[in-house]
Length: 100
Image (tube, rainbow, N blue to C red; front, side, top):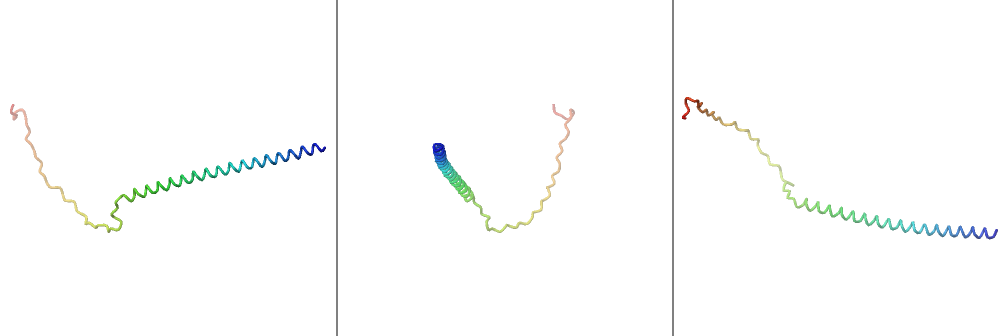
């Protein structure tokens, strides 16, 4: 009976030690995953920041001079009628009038 109790206690001790070791490995993995995700997010945000800077530089390089200018009012111009051009008629050339 004493051997059975000792074996049971040893089993639970080993089991508790294995569970403790398993939890330590899980925690180490979770910590490594968290650090990896944070590095990925940092690089992603840095890339997004650089892209936004590039867009801003391109936009600022465009010359927009209409920021505070008043719109120019122009009077509508009526279309002038087309000038009259008489039709030019050419005489009909027939076999009798042709110079062959």
